[in-house]
Length: 240
View (tube, rainbow, N blue to C red):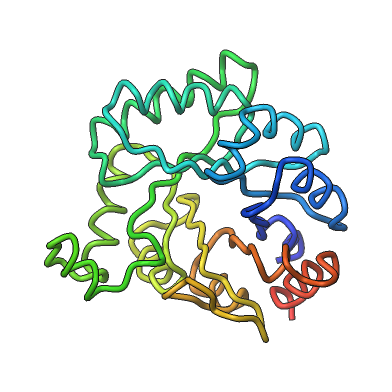
């Protein structure tokens, strides 16, 4: 544990920010290592935002949740890897053929660009879903407790390096998939912050203890009056 650095475990989401705002915010948070670029920012700013963040010395989690036919997923992951994104999301329910194609293409894209291969993260069940609504709206009779590990296993078998999951599923998934399989958990709410639109949440230290490898934290840091202090407080929770 001597080499444990909490800043490496926290990915700050840049959701809801304009490109200039995101770059300014990321530069101002003391000790920040990782940022998440999601759909809204990527659609507005384009691939250049990844390059600009990397120029600031930051590591990028590109959270675009690719879900398409195998050839399209492969092409998207090849280009995302060449951009220098180190974590890239794909939907597990795209199936094994698409997952395998995405993984192979990501490795190829990184090699072509002279970069280390990224880790692909399979999205199992989005943290905004509740079980009853999943059954009612999508006619999925499998409970979340069964569906998440089934999709995680499908992804691991296809060669995917990790999963995005609710922190409430981290313990069971970690028992099923030892490190270095990555478990990246959104739905993290530090002490004294609101739950917001996430249905399945947990505190930072609890999530890490449950087996998460990295935590995605957005509004509790990005909307704080003092984001650097909020980030430092999250880091302190991990070692406290």
